[in-house]
Length: 257
Image (tube, rainbow, N blue to C red; front, side):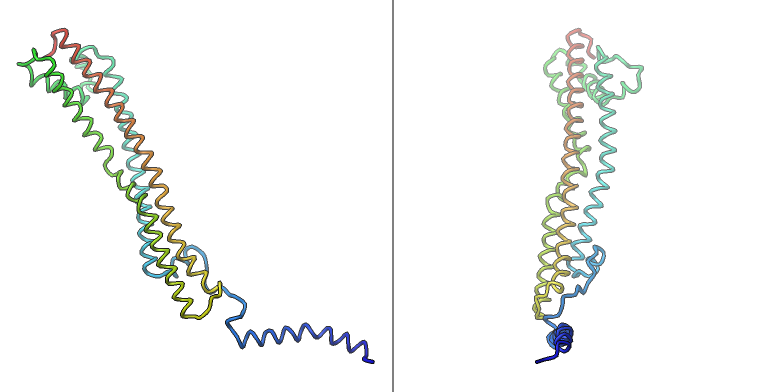
């Protein structure tokens, strides 16, 4: 009958022996070794370790994001200034009874809508009897002024629509290219160990994330500016309507020209 002490000692040594055997087996077959992450997975390190094509994609998306926020800062300041000026001009126009009112007011006299109407009245001084033709010519000048203001307000905004529409696909291209490289690495290393594959896939997916970071603000800012431009155009259109009323009033009084 075996000694109980020997049985206890054997039981205690059995886990250690199994551990030694497992270590020897792993050393003999590295493909089944415990997974170790070979790369750091911080954003900066993923960018530095990425393929050069993926790096170019990321740099392009970063540049697009910088352009988006630069346009936002510049155009928001411009459109806000235009909105304040047009509201002040509209308020001044609504106080006028005739085209020559406010001649001593420099701000009111410099209103481009009034200047356009006065210029057409001066050019049509010998054709004031044709009231309908005169109104059409004044309305045409006011419409041209409104279109010119719209072009000035929308200049530089369309690039936001381009960035919002293309950035996700550019990021997706970087992701596809990076995943292709990850599969090439799998074939070269002859292993599907997740610790080996994960860094390359993470670097690829970073391109998609950066594409969304560039595209989402661009779309939101573009829609915001579109609403601001529409609001400013509405105020300018209201001003044009007030000027037409003033011209029509003067023509009815026989005071135009």
